[in-house]
Length: 115
Length: 113
Image (tube, rainbow over all chains, first blue to last red; front, side):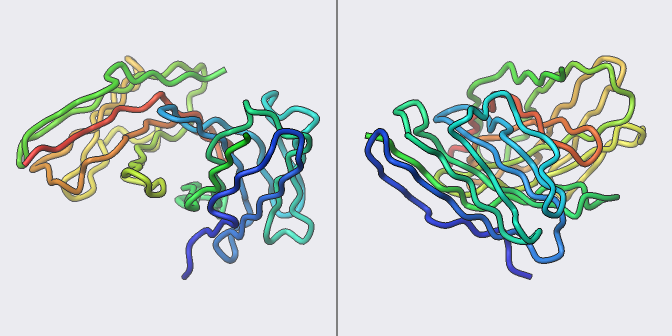
């Protein structure tokens, strides 16, 4: 059983550019979560999906951020018109969403640097 | 809104010693889950241990155990016989149902040889 994968692992972009990240959850996991982590801090929740439905979005998720999970499998997180404050590690996690399987398993993250 | 507080930004112990990391949380919920995650340097987040709030028995996973005090809203992690590979950031996290995790600020643990 492969773990959660994220692509790319690192992204350097110039301010004002758009970026898109991809997350592939553990197969059969119907819940998928996005978090943002800045250096030395705990992850902060951004949004999550059950299958293809986006169930909750954080107030941290400005209008420049959008996430999709079109077929209930992989998900993408897009940031438009990036700002230096968007520099962070973007983490994806997945879970089965029931019973003991409420446990969330994390991917390696995508480190974004906005110059 | 739920909050999670880890009051120890950094801790350092010698290999083979026992160390306890503290965590307190604030919630009005009665049913929830608590977790400890480990994040080694430049590596991904790993689940260490979980506790269901409705269970009175403290969870144990090999060298890792918790002291869950529901009334005090306290959830500490004890690492016995610490090893060099335990060096990492440790995050306490709260979850209601199958929803989002709310993390604490983390404790940087260093195990010295």
